[in-house]
Amino acid sequence: MRVAFLGLGIMGSRMAANLVRSGFELTVWNRTESKAREFGDRHRATVAATPAEAAAGAAAVITMLVDGSQVETVLRAAAPGPDTLVIDCSTIGPTAALEIAAEFPAVRFLDAPVTGSSPRAEDATLTIMVGGESADFERGRPLLEAMGRLIVHAGPLGHGQMVKLINNSVAAANAAVVAESLLVGAKAGLDLDALSQVMAAGSGGSAMLELKAEPMRRHDYTTLFKLEHMLKDVRLCLEEGQRLGAPFQFAALTREILTAAAGRGHGDDDFAALIEPLEGAAGIRL
Image (cartoon, rainbow, N blue to C red):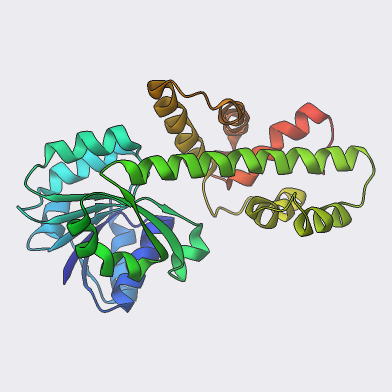
């Protein structure tokens, strides 16, 4: 199958590499052409100068971009042909996914945001939640399985996006709670190794404790998932919740913490950097 992959950022480049390793014939495009050239040289992929050149003749077009505006702009430029399978792996929210799909009624559209940081993108163990028609989902399954371990058909178009937004909002809120737990423990003079060990073994354990406690303690914000992207996802979730009349108060509080961290210059850092404004409020630095 000839596949066009549009967007080679931290996640996209790793996902695209797994498609090549799985034997798909890949044509790539990236806004920064040098990144596309580097990718093409490393992975024996064809490099296109424009989205339209990448999508020409492709059976499937995969997008991995920052937001709905970028997805819409790039797909308009790509102009995928009738019956092309378009799989958008970006996180843009259900409203944007439905609006963009409506612009391209002749294509088959799946919203397929992913969860898992760059190491999971690299070893093809992402979780991918997919919205769209069952027949389109089955058509796209081989591509999705080349990039992820758990592939979930979440329901009709837009449902993959909504599941992703809720999941990321829970993760962000949990990361904030982990940060505050470390600060309370530090204020109490606790051995933070002991605290983390007990929480991990008990009901306080979580993926965020496992993944973010140590980076927070070391102030190591090496980017696995950008703080500004997590802020975007939480904001989108709150917007959808407001539209539905469903409050999400802990997500709203976490949005303010993320906003404060971004205001301190940590937007491009890993979202573990949300501990920075919390340290300021607590008057302590780990």
